[in-house]
Image (cartoon, rainbow, N blue to C red):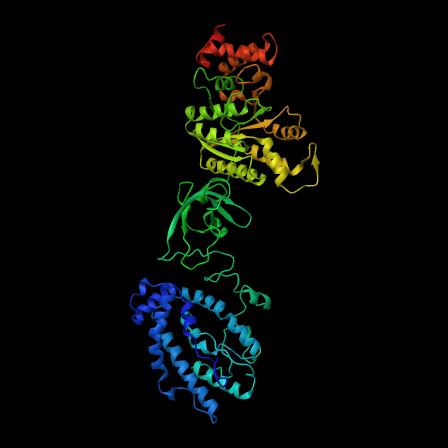
Amino acid sequence: MTDNGAPARPDPRAGLESMKMPELKTLAAGLGVKGAGSLRKGPLVEAILATQGLGSGRAGSAPAGEGPPAKDTAAKDTAAKDTVAKDKTAAASAATDRSSDQKADQKADQKSEQKSEQKPQQKTDKKSGGPGGEADQPARQKGQGGDSPARGKKQGGEASADQKNQSNQSNQSNQSNQSNQGGQPHRGNQGNQGNQGNQSNQDDDDDENGSRRNRRRRGRDRNERGRRGEPDLAVYEDDVLVPAAGILDVLDNYAFVRTSGYLPGPDDVYVSLSMVRKFGLRRGDAVVGQVRQPREGERKEKFNPLVKIELVNGAEPGQTGTRPVYEELTPVFPDERLRLETDPEEMTGRVIDLVAPLGKGQRTLVLSPTSGGRSTLLRRVAAALPQNHPECHVMVVLVDERPEEVTELQRTVRGEVIASTCDRPATDHTTLAELAVERAKRLVELGHDVVVLFDGLSRLARAYNLAAPAGGRVLPGGLDTTAVLPVKQLFGAARNVEDGGSLTMVATAAVDNGSEADEMILEEVRGAATGQVRLRRDLVESGLVPAVDIRQCWTLREELLGDAAGLEQVRALRQEAVTAEPATAAGALSVLLGRLGSRRSNVEVLRSQDRA
């Protein structure tokens, strides 16, 4: 505050605190401050103020003849002298700034920072009725806003004629070579030069639309960079960067890199949507980048933001724009065989190869009742695929599974095990399943062959039924209509891509449990399947493993997976097993296992079948 209604003296601290660290270091070097390169912002501002205090004193003792002419009254004389001293101080600061602020692109940033800092002073000026802001005109007109003094404040009752004349005199000295002599500084295109009451509204026409309520909130939700709602993504020379990697999960208004797997975790990294659009990122991308550690004294964010992207799916970020879109790829029937036969004693793979052959891009349903051997079958398939087809990327997705089953698969499977155990909420089940399939799609877009072993679709539909909002129509068994469609879409995502990769899915579904909901789920997804393996509990109780009912196993267009002669031999073997006595599932499986046990490979079995 000032005495006798004169404008407030400029506060150099406010101008210095609005400057960035590189500008402060350059200014300190020009003033001869020792050790400026190792100081933090607070001590560096104090050192510059201590050095400029000597220069301000010299500026204050300059001849007063350069100021405006003295008036008749003593109060006017004192105001004119204060204005001259203030002019000298601002001119000295502007001259120092010119040596460190030569780039034109810094002017807009400094001006936006001045707006957020000067807002409380503008509100005080508006309440008191004073013009406010005359003292910072020289620096603003020359584009040196980084070190301009704050706008002067006035005490109440500044509407008198004498105080208006004093303001006019200070404007005449501060705005040299300007034609505006009416006490209203020129503000670009505002044009309110004859209206004292509208002076406090200048520079408020920003993204807040100048409303009073928004102006009151303008400084609350902004960080020190002047942007609201977005973290600071700028990297400076004194920042510490930490590497981060994970799977990208893009949501409605934000995105995260899941660093601890496919589920949300405390160490996830925030990714802005502008960065997602810039690099063409998609949900399921494997992202490697860097995260900036919080600066000393800075408010810690819940999730650290990603400031730099180094790799996307193992390639440079600039190459992501040329990849195809998965939904636009041409699907075709599988034409390449996935063989599961390994050891002669391992019957699971040998039986499936004969009764329901698997191809790249197939959608095979494994229908199993409770305790029907589905976990054992998936474990054997997961063990055979890396051995016979190392080019395939194997993903085992477990939804609402026992923790012990997850541990066992993680220790035995040579692939990626993605699990959400039964103690987690339904939203975690749905999130994990969707993100895992999206990850598989991204790999197919790159030309890879991916095999997803999914357990199971029935539990996933129940999770959607709990997590999704009610759609208004309830199916038999208490299942909402909105809970079935996502499961069908997820299962139907598997396909063989023409002249590209493939996504194969072997998914389990519950049957023979007396549940109407399970039957409804099966009816929806059965139409999307291109293969089926049927397991029976009575076969397990009879000691027949794998407990496969070969009479209900099939593969659509299996003639594309092998030669015609081999297909005829396989069909003859199936017919022999099915028609054998007793004509039951156990009898047919017993005949088939007997034939396989007498030979060390399926090829030998088919050759013997041909000779017979």
